Amino acid sequence: MFPKFQKASDKLRMLLQNRANFSAFRSPTSMARKSSKVQALYELCQNMFTPSGSPPSSAAINKLCSVLDTMSPTDVGLKEENLDDDRGHGFFGLEQLNRVARWAQPITYFDIYECDSFTMCIFCFPTSSVIPLHDHPGMTVFSKVLYGSLHVRAYDWVEPAQESKGPNYFPVRLAKLAVDKVLTAPCGTSVLYPRNGGNLHYFTAVTPCAVLDILTPPYREDAGRKCTYYRDYPYTAFATGNGIKIEDGKEEEYAWLAETVPDNLYMRPGNYTGPTIQV
Image (cartoon, rainbow, N blue to C red):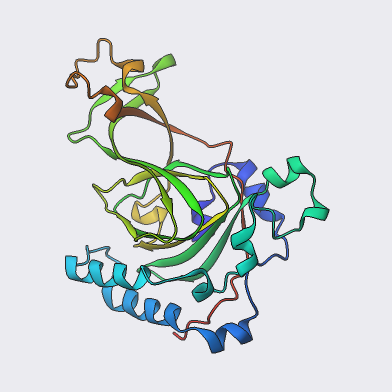
């Protein structure tokens, strides 16, 4: 999934070329003895999801959420010492990085498993790192914060589509705020759907944190599931003369979204060495 997620610009692709021999995980041997929750999660996903992206039933969603709700950092091999790192630089050590470098550390992406039906992955965030606003076209996404605190701000498109023109006549489309909160572990699993639940979201790390994600079906550009990034503007920025009326006092619940190429996404792949999945 990582190459598909990280296509926004040449700058981002260049970041991927600098692949460090980097891991936030325990040894595979110890993990194989310790946990089988990842295997159970994989088997449940295999039974639930299809490449067509047919929405799972409410009962199936609840069952998957109940399993994800029990997942802890150790279940995917995350080192306990990362939980105590207050600036997200524990992977490298205080003695190796100055203060500026520590705050500039990238998000690390760990690919657990991917097939035509779903992706299982982990994002590890240093403090203040950001995944910019992006969409999940035709996809359902399950997110479980494993440790730390993460601010989530998410939108859904207003239907039927409401469009306007921004500065220099670039197109903007109206979206409604669906989520704006901080998730702090331990907490329940969040779910977004193709048309509701906050399908367009961005993440900001309040503290060092990790998120276990399951995306179904995965990003796939030739199937119409391209990851597109957006910038959000207040509703009042382009409200004049567009003929669109919002109830008085509700303006802060809406925003205009414009496609963009992010310049603040710093991400690199890591080497997942948690419990091995038996396919």
